[in-house]
Length: 267
Ligand SMILES: [Ca+2]
Ligand SMILES: [Ca+2]
Ligand SMILES: [Ca+2]
Ligand SMILES: [Ca+2]
Image 1 (cartoon, rainbow, N blue to C red):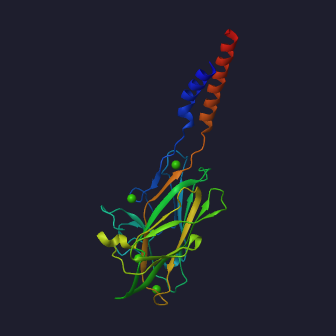
Image 2: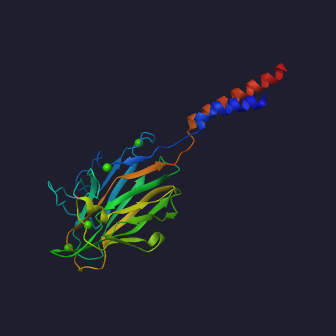
Image 3: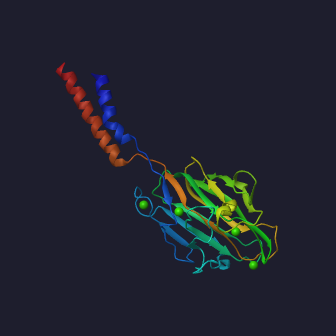
């Protein structure tokens, strides 16, 4: 009798305990960003109440420039100026700057909502056109540094896993990794993916991540116009037991115990 009840319990509770979370994407093809604004929040996950992810741009924001592609929106802006080798072309968040020295930089911070009490995992995104130029009127060296996440506990720093295209050099380890442009990358077309930098934080649950966009030292002291773009950000909420489902589960357990008790009584 008990083993039969156990089977019935598993059958009844199975669907309620198997809480699976689906991957979520902040897709720049559907998101909106007022050109030149410095922070925006997005509701992209129906499974979490309200906004789910906030993207903020800080640092040397006075150096931000318009996109080179008509209608030349002030960046940060959603454009197709940089294609990252994608076909068909997708929109991305373009960040263009004209730094006056090599120490200025832009900081991009992405926060996931507090509603994700266990954090989010499988966070991954790609930066386009991390490259280098030293001639023909352009002298700059895109460099991505201080690439790190904060764990779901709100304290622990989490190092990224990074892959780079052939126009980019990856140096350092762990939290000190840097991706630096070493060749001129085409903004558009089939080879434009050679300046890509793909950053992920794997299975580790995180609550936010950040990176810094600045200059390498391999160019003039006062760099010319330079730009990169942030492509779609994908993540998977870490599942938690839904309180309503837990309550339902408790009811079913109680019902099963009553059945078992009455079964014993009938013996
Ligand atoms: Ca997209
Ligand atoms: Ca939401
Ligand atoms: Ca400059
Ligand atoms: Ca670039």
